[in-house]
Image (cartoon, rainbow, N blue to C red):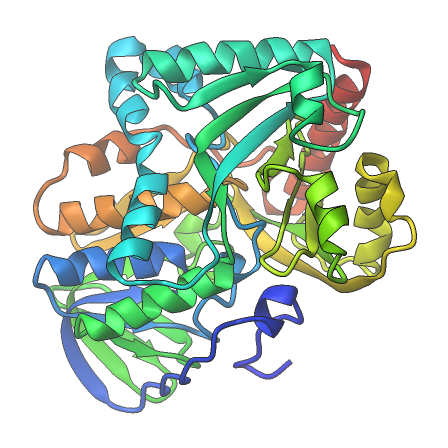
Length: 428
């Protein structure tokens, strides 16, 4: 793989045509330098540019190269840990601000798609599917929780009969439909957001890996062939940040998830499998998720590889999961299989903060990043524009290093995941 090549995914194969951006080869200045051209970086850039600041985005590989161009493409509200986790740890009063933000990311995505005419096959409707009575009870509580925080009129509980009219399988006991959920082509969303950055006057440099950040006022961000001097820096590399800022490594761990995509299905088969064309994710700790593409392929993902190693045979991991849900696809060919990394935190809550006086970061979406990253971009633009209340709410969340340190965090996390997966299977 060259420095500029996307992974061999369905998304890369079906991406909208775009012009590659140049590599940085000079010394330039900007109000804000953003490291990473994924959703966090692009959302931050758009919101900053809309506020009148000058922005440079540096991307080590290609726009949307990481999780933003490889994910399941599902709009799922709230955070990896739901609002009740904030209530338990912070109290209901302090948690209220997180409840107010829990449904904003999806609205930001739809606003950007509309305002900048982004062609990303956006469709409405997402379903949480329960595999047992315990999970169905959890969805009943989730509906009440979300409605208590203002998400009213969007949710519908589905019993066993109702969910079979949404997903043609007998494995689910029920579900929860979120009409404000949805799905889209994730790489095309990132590419469209990058075009919005350029239209607003921002600069994006691809194949421009950052080698170091010299703190100061202003800060200086160096690449192999150039540098950016900026009043503020936003670090948005997430699981692909590597060792750029060691202080961000100890409290997070890259993890891989796998996705497969079938050959195009006959339209009648696609309509039978997912009659409403909603996206679906189950309620397991290590969850599965799936949806139809714009050309009637089934995109099915799941599984976690702690430490972000690439499995030798992705299809062998995910295809059995797909067939358990849809046995009739036994003879269907898999055209694409790939892996992508997300960044896990011990609390499974995102990390947002500041290093020194003018270096900001957001990371650790813990597998729930599509809506959060877009929200994070708006919040980071707010704090740079001296509106810090929402940034401060995230920055004050406590975060802890993984047990066992850098060496043992992978096996310890895998043991924990095995325990929760066993509970899912037993329905306890």
